[in-house]
Length: 300
Length: 252
Image 1 (cartoon, rainbow over the protein chains, first blue to last red):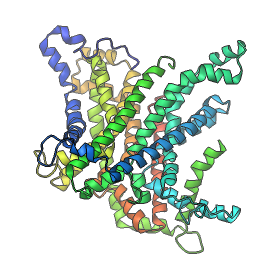
Image 2 (cartoon, rainbow over the protein chains, first blue to last red; image 1 turned 90 degrees about the horizontal axis):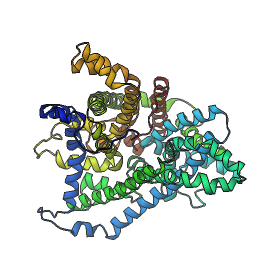
Image 3 (cartoon, helix red, strand yellow; image 1 turned 90 degrees about the vertical axis):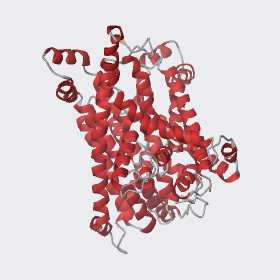
């Protein structure tokens, strides 16, 4: 977005030199738009339309209203809760890790190690991640066993269960935290050292620097990144499915079951379920883009 | 910091320790031996690797000319194209594949799910879609770092045609960016579960899930192997991509 694009969608510099030239220029991006139409826009659009139709293809709002039945509503709520908890937790911890490594005065190798590891860990998701947590915090996992052995503390008798809201949130944070580190690194880099020095010269204390300078600049990217993490967790299927099977009633698993075997006994209700998911991830991404625009004013 | 180190290393350690427990009482590599000897392991890894390579080829052929053309001739379209490439991050993978199953089912105009070969093709296209945000970002960063216009005009004045310019001039100049996009794509595709499972293809992700549901120690060995693959991909990006930075994170 760094480049200046004053005239948004006008067929550009060559437009003046004649019609044949214009169509030539457009032909260059045609394959991309055909691809986007076939594999992004039409499939999604068709689901959205399907959400508003009954089995005979007539317009109806019935499906959308049916989303508010207890089972479906609770699956949305659990999904939102897990995604929000893992996004907030991931954003907090990820931000402090990134800040400590970049601006915290640690040796430079800490930063490069953290960034490389974050690249790996944020991609280490899905089925293998679920296996890793089962082997660690499952009933016979290493951490569970060690805690019993050393501290005589059984997390399972204390009420913890990996196959639950808390367990899933903890597992999701394994890819949320590194993702936050990767997203926040450029923003923290953008915090100029001079700002801190200037505020110190003017007599500001540490908390005043944070309250009046760092936070007003950083809150849009931090909140924006948290929204991105939220959408990221909200659409996740594989980790949850491999971890809990269909024990935990989150919306992606419900949709998975619906696609597999029409468990809702209504195709169009399935489309409405998908529509609801697009709405939620769409809203959080739109807010992210808006906040990113705000933060780019300062962080260049 | 200590908390972070613990949180990230204990699960890896736990998985590794668990994977060695196959024989009662002693640590052994038995679980790995069994996994590697399983013909389905070889078959699914080969299948997913082939699919990943095809995805990379299709993705590069789609993204490089588009990003190049946008940069050179249609800079006004850049926001539109950027928005489209970000859509796969907005629309969850499971919703996309649901759409594909509706639009390309066996009784539709374009019955891609009709036979196994065409379903493979559909799966490749779905993976290209999943990788689109990362591939486009990587290539676009690479293209911005070079002077596309001068290179093109120089090549043109020497009499090169468009294919020549693309493959002999532009492509070698963004090789590093393309490679980092390619490894990231590989890391995303190799263990992908949702799309492969719902399109019913024998990929590595669904195999992992199946093992997880039926076995005790082998899944840990598989998780360690997958972690090794992801690590290798990211390591290769670091090796090739020094200097060029894109966002490095995939689909979950």
